[in-house]
Image 1 (cartoon, rainbow, N blue to C red):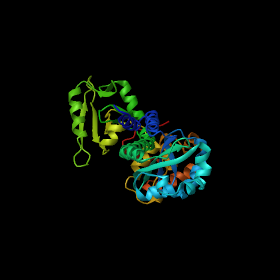
Image 2: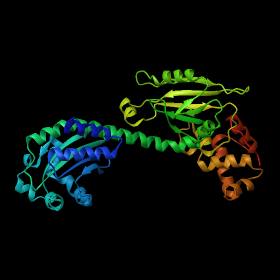
Image 3: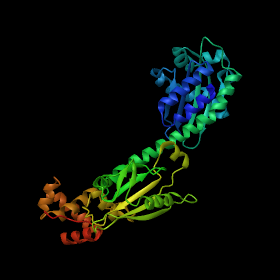
Image 4: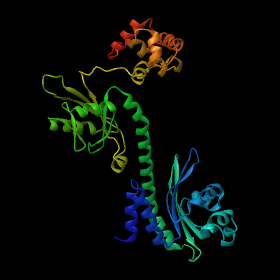
Length: 377
């Protein structure tokens, strides 16, 4: 494997391994006999620029770069042309050395020339690969441009996959707290059906090992073949539309079986391959489970289909409804929530008006109708 192939391999490994990307840029720097190499990306909505990885760049000068770069003729010309270029293709060396970019950023680091290429450009992000030459070597030449041109498609795809991975991770992180508050058990599986996420309810259920459990990172049960076939069928989404299935998991001892509702998730094959993102969602229903209400779960159920913000139940109102159902009096409810009786009464008044309730018996009936079990104090 030659140096070029090694750089490409490290570029793709760098989607999930920052160290591999830095090593790839370092090998690229050696192949170009460059003083430094850097890969950066800009958010087109916020115009925020950040360095993805670099080798040989003094990051203490980053503020100067951010201040000067947007107005720099070289970056503007490369962005407009959409192809790799050197500084000498855009301006004379004497003009370049008189520029603020040269005096404030190049010169302090011993750089004397630059070659750059756009690697990604869409509505959301733009990316660029930059190589800097030192004062001890001549400017970049045609062979250097040819190598950079060969590498830009791989850098662009790698950067796109990296951004997809970041987006998926952020989306999952943003939703994890909602799933953790949910009374139902949720498990997310990747393309190989390994578990990549379980919420708190699923953790408790799987820990009991009652018919369903984890084995070598995968969901397992007595009838493993049936479960595996349902998962495979659910994962085969057609034409971009999610598919799904159900499966009953026997528990023995005349107990009611667990019910699994399995749904595929519409995530790109590339993202699944690179970052092991969730490909299948499994909802585990325990018919013997008496669920206690939580403010988040109650809000989700009561606000489903409510389009007007002022008609939606707030978290404080949901908490007041749950606590007044548990407590003998409003005074007790207020004490448990560390609120005044007047505050609790105000929350209840607004909640009653939004969902058409009159008193505590109505609240108890509502919660029972939604499948919640209340332990009164």
